Image 1 (tube, protein in one colour):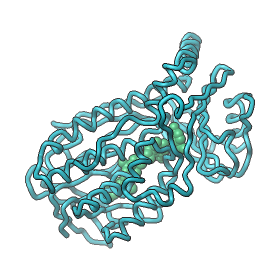
Image 2 (cartoon, rainbow, N blue to C red):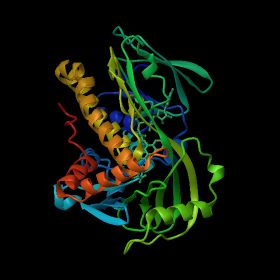
Image 3 (tube, rainbow, N blue to C red):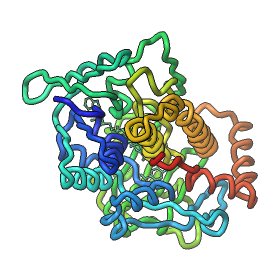
Image 4 (cartoon, rainbow, N blue to C red):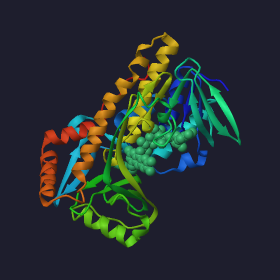
Length: 394
Ligand code: FAD
Ligand code: DHB
């Protein structure tokens, strides 16, 4: 098999890249280890920055999103028995939108297949080679036999547990890692959320977040110990923790309903530098992950892909190498700012289990400093609604 760009992974990063390249007449093949059904139903992220929404609109991927997504002008916070609302539209003129990651994945898969795109599901990449020279290849297993894609460039969009990152020589790669001493228990609930906007709640006994997937579907998260087991969490315990941590605030009411899905995810920050070696480019979770508190993971993946599409289009259409040369540096500047915001939101909103009484008082003071001032709220809003992304066309 031969194509211009070989893409590993049909998550938001790989699919969007394939679509952007197609719009400029550049061919690609995506190989994805999971089934199409698995990719289209996996419950993950749900919040889109304004730039991500604009990008999906600009590139013809927004038809279903514009019908069912939920745009939010504000975001709410509770801590120390107080309630604060950040009015993003008023402060910065931008907003965020709730639209589930698996819906975006579904939308892009449909558009790629409509346009004749090649996506091989249940095809697992086993080896990436030739990235030092001009004949890179990907070896993968599909329908019981080993196959090879020969290509000009490889995009490693295969997530945190993929093989692309480890295909770079260890002498040139450096990983920056931080593991948090807690995880999130995520729940999907058949009930109206406490508010039509997201609520991030700090409580001395743990953080909780109320998000949603539809007006009658709540998506909520509870801070739990990192090695906790879902078996320790009865439904009664989940409800009593959500109720306690949300606290009592006028207009915020917890509605109970069937808990349709629940699982625990660890929290981690990780960046691998550089994001390019020879003809292999990493994008999205394969290069970096963030703790979910700032809702940045999927948005960062889409921002990387704009930088990568620009580099590849500039090479093929204009014979320009400069955007390829600067790919890693351009991505990493934005990545590190999102890493900082995610770390900041995480450390500010989660009480650390080993925190001293001083640490807890200091944390509550920080929350009042930030959310009690217009400048603090503006700083949060600017980062939450998303930093600028580069135009994907050179
Ligand atoms: P992925 O979506 O991980 O896609 C990578 C793809 O590559 C996968 O489909 C995988 O099957 C495939 N793959 C891996 N290895 C191979 C191989 N060898 N061969 C072929 N294919 C391969 N972010 C938020 O902002 N908010 C959240 O609430 C949130 N919740 C999350 C919950 C979980 C359990 C996880 C894992 C992540 C969550 N994230 C969240 C992060 C967000 O979902 C990711 O940042 C986003 O999926 C990144 O997109 P991606 O395309 O880079 O990687
Ligand atoms: C969602 C997840 C997040 O981590 C977040 O900060 C906001 C929303 C969500 O799944 O809806």
